[in-house]
Image (cartoon, rainbow, N blue to C red):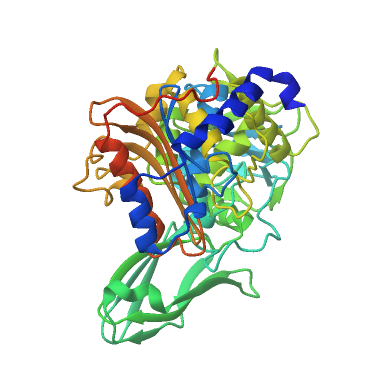
Length: 498
């Protein structure tokens, strides 16, 4: 079906397959590093483009696991489809009037993919209610997560790895406060461990059965075991830490262990009580009724800032939220807000379709492309170096190219590349998104050559032997080779770029 829609691409792909063999041989320095690291050449996929000319191609048409380089797909599609003025939004709404300081009905907290929503923001919205004269809420607090369907994809999902409490594993929904994280301060002496928890939550405490051990403080994570939230008979919740902890050590760590309904419930009660308000109702899931009145709202930062905070540190939760937003929200340039499409499809199906529609609109064949959550934290996602390279070419032509490029880590300077490529020709010059899983190492972005000419760079290693620095050594040798190049390479036409 796609080939029928895009005949020029089919011809170009055939030319690439025929003539790309001239570039299939790896540069000698790179081949040498692969041999030294014990990696077979078929574990590597590479495509380097200078303009529309192929500089280097090796296994470029094969779909591969991209790890976090998949975030480039999500963030560029988000910029192009939602626009740089896009913001997520959280609203406090009511269906009844205020009578002598009493809200005689439910208060609705409506989620709108607001990636920045914090406990302080919730407090400010509740303070706005206080300023409007509300002192008591007679109804319930209704949590509306219906923007994403299903509303709670985190429920019943097996953990991705052995650290489900870690931030990188948080699964998004349309209404997350503080990203559902608890910040734990752990300070030990030779005999005692003291714990503090932020934010303060109504009837939630923290404790531990951790054993203090003689160990270096820098190795504290080796004794860490999965914490749990234990519900008491009286309705209180106790967060319990397990494992061991070094003596005379101080560390701060954030964990995701509370059910997110409990988190918002206890946070709301705590903040409203601190403001002098009264609430005796329940906290329930529900839908915002038609005709409700807006009482207070919070909006996230604009999309380019979120894109930067997605790609620089490789934030999985932000990437996943943007991916779902592609299937739930539409840019409204006039108001900077959103409209929700009327459709019965799952949010994933709409998001997947939105990304593929964007790719096809830029004449990028999506055959073999698999996107599961848009973050790369997946064992299912696949993209070929060729598809990624054409996406990066589209990024150079985008109206939002400056915002897109500024979101990528700079070699040896910041983000996930701050400790890499020091002392190389790429240091301070290349902008590359990193990707790492147990069996995957990847880099994708832009590398200027010795003459300052920009190269689109994509390289992925998929192998059980990719870890322990082996795959990284190969990719960094490739980056160095491109950054030091500048002589005339054989010019072979790449598949037709839009």
